Length: 259
Image (tube, rainbow, N blue to C red; front, side):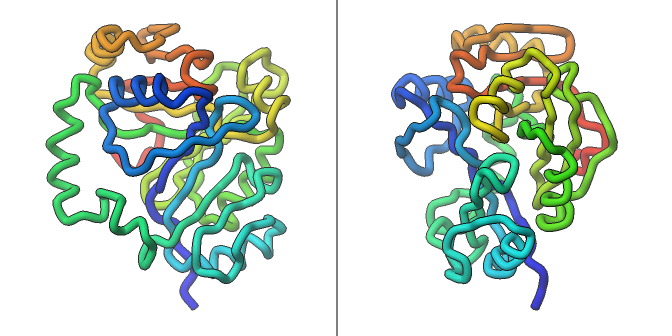
């Protein structure tokens, strides 16, 4: 049997305490295509999980269980959720083919590539790609064993963490998603407080933009909750973005194979 292969990032799931202002924020700043609307909340606003498409989900389920990760629906061929206490943050996996989302996800449609190449490059934010997702954990070695040995993630060269004073390792997971695994302990940061409050979890998303100054103008026009602008990046106020810190930068990660 072929070894399961992780595909594209399916979605992140931000939990919010008020859907209307959250939709206003995301629609005005990012101009996304809406695939589904839903609502749920626990432990306060934060990112609940990140989901990936996977080829041969049953093989992946077997590998996760063999590694001691508790999962739902083993052997069912449907969506698999990992227990959040067994992974750094909750992970979800969905069949890349043969699933219901093939009819909903616009990236499965034949005209997607042409649309994506003409739509977002013209957007005033100057979006290039999602640089990386930041996940906090208190055990980088255990996180690496899961990501590299079980999920076949590829380590990137050592580089600076998103939050100064923390320790990070970066991994290419699946086709084109980079995850920053960060240990914030010993720092007086929101990431450290989140680790203490809810355990290992997703705390931030960083986007690469073409021109930081132009992105700053757009964010100001959209009245986005900008809390810091520097030569290196723009940072939004996590207290006003539902527990997930959004950053924008021109920086390219060292060893990023997507460039």
